[in-house]
Length: 622
Image (cartoon, rainbow, N blue to C red; front, side):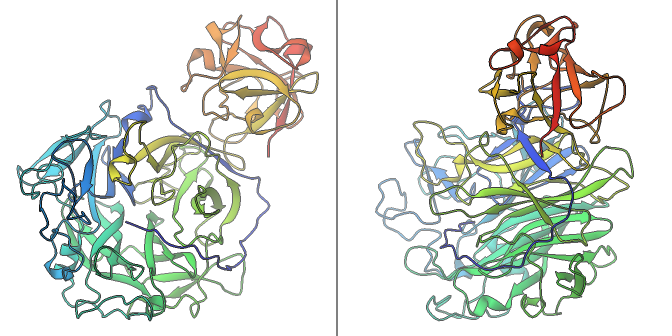
């Protein structure tokens, strides 16, 4: 979905603050297979935006707003153009001066089915060893592989003589403007704010696009919340008159969908140009649907919930909105109006992540400390924060003990080693599973899925906003702090800290800066003497003893093997390791991590016994 908008700083309510240890999130791309996880490089998908990922029956189902139907290679096969707003004077435009199939002056009900945003689905096994995804070919009736990243001239297909055949062969969107208008033939008429002229005809309020498909599976039934777009058709493009609202669809197989209804609109649609409600998250937790919506220009991220009721064709009962109540540490859940129009000010709706961002993305998940049923868990959320024009947004991590308690800000995610954000900013997602809850852990803090939309353009390619550059990719993610993995620095005898720069390990830092902080990925938040541990550096790679010890130290491996697994020893004897304890790290062949001369330079694995140079002070990095 195109979201090029001016940014308005808005004053939002203060965040709830608790006294828990700060939680940090370390996303990293794993480039080699492990016994329990296939490389993240096998789970990328180009031409994707507004994604969600559901894990069902051993498969990932990745939903996104693809332009595969409206994009195609020019006849030279050198670049990809778009049927939505082609310039009729372009020599590569095969209509040669005739109206484009997505001419914005054409009333919505008469436009080509490929126009606007389109939501599609691809899938593959969670243990897949191939880099391509499957999609449903509705022409042949069978699933077909589509390239993860299209090569020039291959996918989307190259234009023939008349431009009619584009996209992957037999591909159809699961949600489209045409499908919405067929399912909801008499939509509520949208107000037309002064100054932006949302529509010029009686076609006002018909859908012109569909995006942001957020999908869950409950007991074999699929449910989707998505953003419907209503745009103002003028001479040559979408305008600031855009309006966004939330809608609902159901499916038996995740491939063919039935649009059920509009869910929610904002009462501000009569006041705002380019306003409305964007769908950013749908999850299932403890027999409730939880829905995140971003109200543009006003409340930002708001949260709604409804009990799961599969006796109802929609699958849910009464929706409620999280509002401010007499207890500042808990939401007051208030029933939403029957007509779906949300007056967030009158409802005293809670702004979940109170930061000044107009288009505020958000994703949340319940993450457990271990895979054991009933293990401690927290709700973690990621949102974007606008900084300044031409400056990447920040990705911020929030947490709450449950979905009745307001989120508390935890930390800003280190984005140094991530792909640049896509054209719509950071678009995060967690993998969602059916019937999540404390009795059925599906995400654990040691290792779980995190997805982003990144810009994968290569040197020499034309970076022109085409969605072939915009790719969803999975990262292996670890949480540290609070109930999750320990996070600490190692101080040498000389007062230096072990650090990693571009994979090189040394002890030259005099304070606990970002590259001197290590995460010890494990279930739970404590370490004990003689426990086997691994250490993840800031770059997402593992501390490693070259040849298993007896030589240098490095931090270049992206997966943990024997050379990256150590025994942590509490120097003063057995027991739990706490802040300030003296510790040593013993490699696979019995050598110890050593800061030569007590620090200030080289670090290796040469010591054959615990001595001053191989003793470090374990210092909690908060």
